[in-house]
Structure formats: structure tokens, C-alpha cells
Length: 404
Image (cartoon, rainbow, N blue to C red; front, side, top):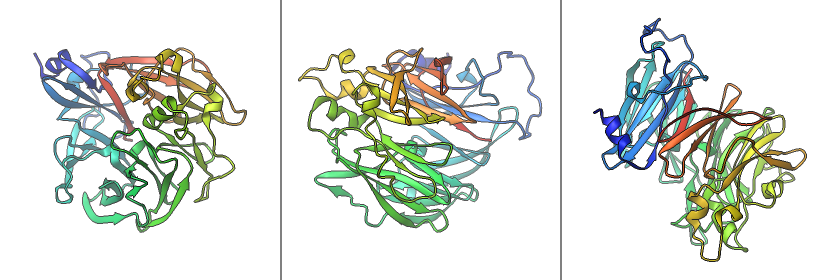
């Protein structure tokens, strides 16, 4: 029995999945070694009693209907992926190494460089804490408020940079760097959200900050104060406006406590480095008064957001935060930013609030795990109409990138 089958058969909690595969296993790949076809990649991490492993899959179409993890490249531990300008990167889950690969049209991966962050104290290379600016510049988070500046083309480290003025602690709460889902590059600047919370990710400061870095010299240009707790998701519309909203954790307290800071979202207009103060919104009003998480823009003034259903969860005075942060008691809603209205997305059942979505070539894909993370369903969602299920796979998939 293969290691993959041993792990899959004894999965306890989490897993991630995805490998596009040709439905004809006997078809001989053409153009082997060339690099002309489009390439997409998904990472699949499986955690079990047998150990953990991550499977990196590549494919050349967004319309794949089947997966074959046996054909994926296996990495130990909880490895992560990223891509920029045709280069695929894998961050080791059990070491501070980063590996770069070229991808052939036949799906082959050829190692094309390594980089180690060992001298900076990292024990892994989590690309969910990395920002790819372009082919020659990237930022890896260090100690929450610092960055390691490195070059994806030369695979060399330039040094570190600090966010001067960003407080490591506020009102007894510590600063946390947002994940890659809340980092965006626009018009020569990189935007990254920070927030303050306790060790359990339950109590949040009512405000966050958005750091703006110059990509020309890697310097901090300014810190933008944002009157919303736990900002950890960023999205951009057709005009170039940026929206920042919360992740699932900061929704627990306002569900369970009346005086906790409520979730909300802010906007930075195209061409500006300041909040659009007249726009800041509580998306709760668009979803029937429910607490929200993870707003993402779709198109034509329409976005999607997860809304927590207290009745479905059976919330009482004794309910614990993990009922909110870990349970499948959320509904995905489309919301119209212009009219302030919303409605549940047709075709989807209750989900976990911490859903992942990826906009690739104008198409939005949702990665929705089961409650125990034993399987993940991949759906496609448009501005209108019901969500369409594309396929289901073992484990928990949460990384989906376009390589070229």
C-alpha cells in the first residue's frame, strides 16, 4: 500500500488535496520539457496517525474534473506553495528551506534553486506568511512585525526590514501579522494588515492597522489605522479599490458577547494610501444582522461573505468560541455593495466560516472542507446564479495558484 493510501486511510483531522489529472491514464504527454502551456497548482496536506505529508499537483486547465494524488509531488509535513512569473515555490513544512521549480508541459517538476531561512530562526518556510511582489522581490514575515526581504529569481536574501511604529502590544494584546489572504500588491506598493489579539484569538482590539510598503526600496511608507477588529482578508475590485475584512476568529466574541467589537470591512480607493472613511461598513446589515467573515469581491459591485447562523449553531450562554470558529454553521451570502442587500448563495449547504476562495483568470473558486477536514469540495462561484460543484477530493485544500 502506498504512503498516501496509508495516510488517507487513517486521517484524523485535517487534509489538503488537489491534483489535476487527465482522465485518460494511457495518454502520452506531448511537448515534454517545454514550458508553453498554462500551469496551475494545488497543494494537498494530509495529517494523520501515520504522519503528515503534502502533495503538490500541477495541471493545465481550470476545468479539471478528477484528481490523482498518486501523481503529485510529495513533501513531508505541512508544506506550502506559491508562484510568481512562471516559477513554482514549495516551502518546507518541517524545515526552513524554500525550493523553486520549473514546470514542464508534461507536468514534470524540475528543481531550480533552494533558499534557507535557518539563520533567521525559522523552523519552516510557510508561504502563507509570504508576499510575492514580483520576480525579483518578496517578503517573508518574521517575528510578526518584521520581514525578510528575498529575491525569487536569484534565490538570495537581501536582509530584514521592520515596520517602524507598529506596536508589538496594545492594551495587553499582541500584534499578529495577517496571512497571505490579507496581503495585496498594487501600483508599486504592498499592503499588509496587522491586528492585536490574545493567545486564544478570542479578544481582539477594536481596530487594526494596514501597513503600506514601497516596492521600490522595501521601506514602510505609512500605517493606516482601520476601525475594525482582526483584519485578515483582502480583495480588489475591477477599478483597483482594495477591501479589508476579518477572518473567522474575530467573529466569535461578538456572537457570544453583546459588548465585543463587531466585525466590519474597510476600503482603500484606487490611487490612494488612506482609508475611504465614508465607506467603512458593517456587512452584518446585508446578511440579516449576522456576524460575518472573509468578504471577497466577485465583480459588478457584488461580493461574497460568510454569515454565522446562531440558530443553526444553537448558541447559548454556555457556548464556546470553537462553535463559531470551527463549526459548519455559516452560510455564504452574495452581497451587493451598491444596494446594501444580500442573499444566500444557492446550491451551498452550511460551511465553516474560514473558507478559501481564489480568483484566477476572472473565475472564482471556493475550497470548502468538511467539518472534520477529511474532504474538500471545489466549487465555482459567479456574480449571479447558483454555485457549481467542480469536484471533491480527500483532505483539506486551501492553496490554489496560477503558475503561468
